[in-house]
Image (cartoon, rainbow, N blue to C red; front, side, top):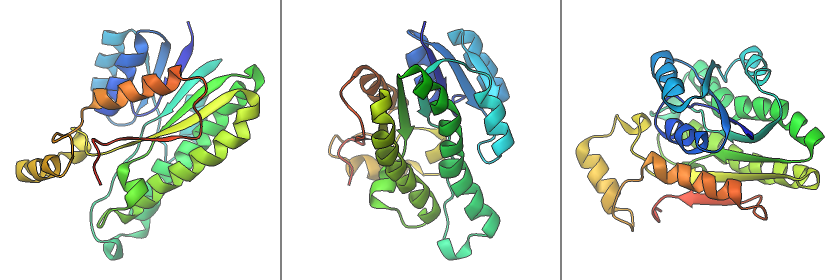
Length: 230
């Protein structure tokens, strides 16, 4: 059975990705703080959970060492920060960039080395609609997710000759904990602003990842799973 590595798998979009790929792949997924949820998901899906802090290079390298012959890498883990850019501390800004962009790049480099040797692989990066359009009061997050898009396009060209596809999903407003700070009225307004008139589900993103994994002549693409938002 082909092996898949999914970051940020303990809840929301990550858990949906784990459930989706556990049907067809030997899945290892990472978590940071949600140990109980991760262990429960691992038992449910017969997968493996590994703790990894994407803001710490040593943690990243250790997590990458837990999997060999990885054929599918889904970079889903990330954090957000909501607030005025001018009020952000150095630590807050670095934490967002290091986790959402630098950590993703470091882990991908470690995993991609094995893919290059095997001359096959599929990498899917999870960005955000804000990485495409930008968002007020989420400037650092927008910058990191925009970086993921540039990373995807560049890496796809570099790894294509080695038989490795690299694509990106840019979710819109998805019903996850990351949006739990929004009020019911805010969520209704966002749904009304979406042409499909609803908030997305984690499963919507997982299904798009399945499509990208199966589509062997698709690479360097940014797929918006956003209901037409923006």
